[in-house]
Figure 1 (tube, one colour):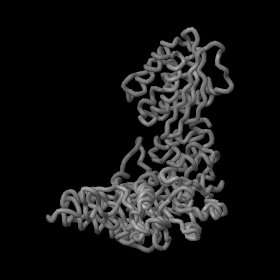
Figure 2 (cartoon, chains in turn red, blue):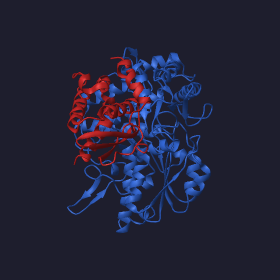
Figure 3 (cartoon, chains in turn purple, orange):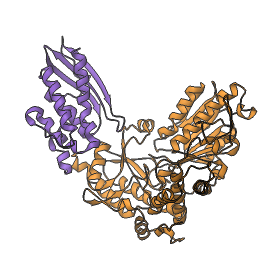
Figure 4 (tube, each protein chain N blue to C red):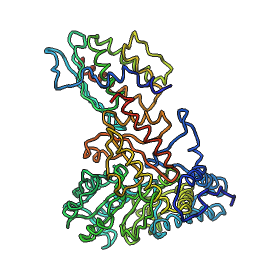
Length: 150
Length: 441
């Protein structure tokens, strides 16, 4: 496992060009039901506040603010890009799949058909200390999704 | 006794340490002899925890192989031997910091030592309120209107116990702020430490900034108003000569695992007249004189604060670690680490996009450096260095308020010890100089 497999170019790109970043700059779509979740990793101080808007059973928008390492920021960006337009059920399933891959210590391969760009985080599973970095925004999204659809 | 391996550093000498000697010392540390990600391990995280020389590992093993027993009870041979080595260890560690035997209390670590003082003091308030403990205790009782003073550079272990003491007693917590250069604002300290101050707690050396605080000046401020002084000596005792009597602090704490000993053992020093009147923190076996169904009388220090079966093998190992440091020469170690620390800071300062926190090169500091890399999160820096076999600490180093003061959430910290060479520092600097390019920052 080399460092380059952990820090794939797509991750470095997303950590800089952050899709969905900026809660204040994006207003939630009118008429959508929203949920918002704040997640903190006390070990490293990574922080994500994520807002998710749902209308007609579809995820309309995922916006977030955050501070943290490249893995955590890129992961939030990829999630935001990937999740928008999915049905509530689809996003739940994708989050579940992402969690399974990340917690597998490398045993479960990522399927790009399901995870899209998020498959690039497969390498993170080999670094136990970094799994939380990749998961933080996905945990926030799951929480926000539950709120928005409650 | 069986023979234990003789530290390379036994070749006692008065000359300054150099790389050749350090490489001999390194042979005493089995864990340092390994490859990490295909590269020789460069361990620069001794500020978090240090490594154990073979003599320390063997001392703990020998204790279990030959004399394991509960101390201070039982008349059998092993119990006597165990008690003897346990109490000899106390004397060795006491001597190392200029304390008296009776003033040296075993704890699990420095954090427990600070909590012990915090709880003993709130217990003092409870006792005094009910007329228990005599007049000596009245002066130690903290209550509403009183103030507890800490500093903005404290490790959480020397902050939160005092926040909680303030909560339990109704006292107010204040703090001495830090300058942009990472030193204490002594001008402000003179106002903050006032007539209401009952306790002043501060670190001897900062685990983030590397700053060595002016203990004498701070103690003088406390004495002027009759305040107690608690010193966090976690980052000083392992690395420099510390004499608690000379410093004239009331309490001092340090951890064994930061000074070549195993985890699970630390020390609280307290002036005897305080320890003997303060109520205990933990109660139970081994710390009493007479027990009835209604109440108990307590032994004087140190047993007063050592309830239950103690960490005997760790205490023995800590004394062995102290011997290792003494034989190498704590002043020589301090001088060597100062050299390493200056090399670290100077090297980091010369790399584009690096901001070292704490005193600039040329100023006095301990042998560590924490820094921010522009555009790269500390966690990524640590991962990049680990790929090259270099172990550093990343995060807030249990000092969130200090990082907030510095405008940062996390830093990367390299911390040295007697087993690090200048080549370690240079390899680290070389790796750091490639971080921003790798992350395209």
